[in-house]
Length: 125
Image (cartoon, rainbow, N blue to C red; front, side, top):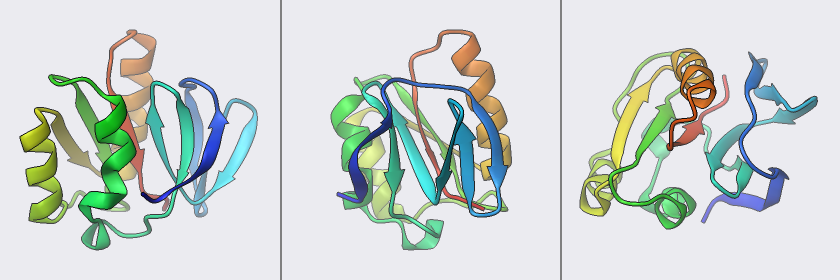
């Protein structure tokens, strides 16, 4: 699994800014990619969508119920993740919505404000 240790923030917080290789949320800065699941916001050791492997998504699969969905910020441009990753989410019954990291961060904030149940993974840009 490629999350780094314990949560940087327990729960979900709006993303205040992204870019320069990281994210700002909950009055904190984080260098690198992040995932957001019900237990918190975690560092994520993924730097490019084409290198994404099923093992990198373990925490997302573990914490989200079936019929949930994941926003996947894929970097500067919208890209599809590799087939094994798409299959992992399909087999788990979890929707996968890839989009550029900027679009994913904006969508995340809207869905969070609406109180929706979902997860997110953002590759830093």
